[in-house]
Amino acid sequence: MTMYAYRCPNGHVTYPGHELCPECGEEQTDEIDLSDRTAEVVTWTTNTATPPGVRQPNSLAIVEFEVEDESVRAIGQLAEDAEVEIGDEVRPVYAEELRDPDAGIREKASQEWDGYRFDPV
Image (cartoon, rainbow, N blue to C red; front, side, top):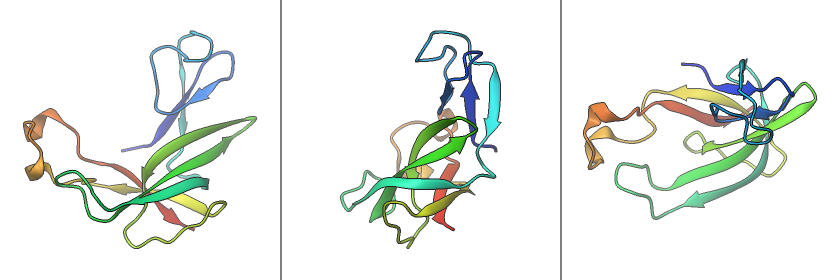
């Protein structure tokens, strides 16, 4: 699995992708692989009252990737036991399960459980 941001013909970059650019309405056509890049922590928090199937405590971060002349932000879990501060550099790390599929109320096959966490560099 790859962590993609998307660019429209006017150069706007978004994550996650949308059919149309949220900024100008043009179709997003270019994929930009973020999985091999690093990002900067913009802010972070730790949630101690998590939903069923989500690890407890669960630290989340908003991070910012620099993509040529643009920047794009993403939110996601921090790697387990990761300690970060605003301004720290992190990298996306693939995780097969971001939460326990058996703890949900929806049919397991109806959702994707994998994604990316952020790990300090």
